[in-house]
Image 1: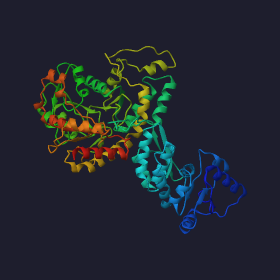
Image 2: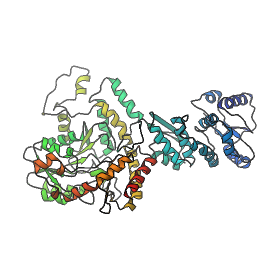
Image 3: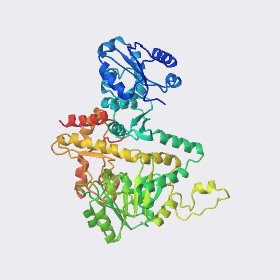
Image 4: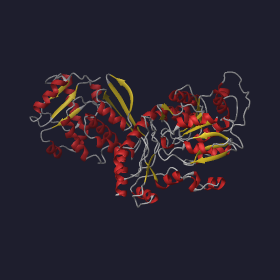
Length: 591
């Protein structure tokens, strides 16, 4: 370990490459030939006195020879001078690279002046081919910890995403809240704590082949990949112990003594929930037109009739009063959609459903994590809540979903129906220590189970989902601030301190703009930014329009919102430069 109290100090060192630095240090160390031992406090004071007196000073931390000579664990070196701009012309680039490589790991000296000098040189050479991704990231991280170069960190992370898969880690003092918050905002994770320091790490596994900013990208780390590999090596890849662990973890995350059943999609989950509640031919199920077809299709699977209602103009979620108008003696279930990640008006809806003895299945495909009156969606007093883990959601399993319920009876039905209606799990049957081949089919079930491979991803995505949401919330806050002057209609925010998952960030063009929604999206694509539209309402889709005699006039709010809506990119891997690119592009197009 590096002794932070003892520092080797050489006056007027004139060594111009790594080999000479190591050689002279080795010699000095072995012969105990050094001038003075300084405490950190005294050294800082010495810096301030002699800054203008030495053309070059080399600081090396004391360590054993083995660590010193091991390039994977170098000690910190810092070079600075009175006339640094002149020195840049003298020193060859390789010397600066050697010194930078040595300075980025564990320098204790917190002199901002020193880092500003190095940063000045490094910024000019950032995009030289000889500067590797690892070096760019490491130096950027270290500069940021000294209060300089935040834009460089963003640029470096973005630059690394263009190339091969990378990861970067560092130690940060627990007292350095500024640096910790900066790293967290950039997707770094706190891995462990040691000696009043956090070890923080960021995985960069996705390569961006060009400068196009996609509408959505999942953040997959080493933990997920290693867990998948573990499942593949275990010999059990379908529903098994990893799926069970994911279900238990998810139930604990939601709280409220819920049951969690993993399935292969939220669509499957809604279908199973409807079947578990006994929805059948002749029943009616109320849901919103302003949603994806997956919210309504399972109703048809059950032979029931979907009854569509408009949305509330303030939340863009299902309008409770419109639901009230559509309730009939045939109404069996209401399916509200927590649109874009904002909770629907659940207290009013739950009260209405109880008055009418109607069940509620929450479509929470967008709502992880989202709260309503301080309670996580999934823990409310409803019958079933269904989440989605599709690739563009706040967390992903590639494909997948989770059915959550407080009812043991519903949970038992869902569990059996998701795998052919069989009364025993395949894992239990095939791994038992004694003959266990017998099973019974108790329902005409489906093939809706989640695999252990998918669950392996979900286990670690769930551990990160709060950080993912936090980053999305930061991006939404920047959008809210930077776009409000454009007379755009910005998305609704949660009230009473509730949590918005920000699965989607949807802006709407007001009547003040002559540009059409479609043309706006085309212009954004020209600027290298992917956008979306959420959603084309079901009353505009051929099947639903034809089968249920739906027209635009029946849903004026949904239709109006749809015609002016654009979904901007919002996901945890976005850098500050990405956000700036989106904001500037929107402002430029609308100016």
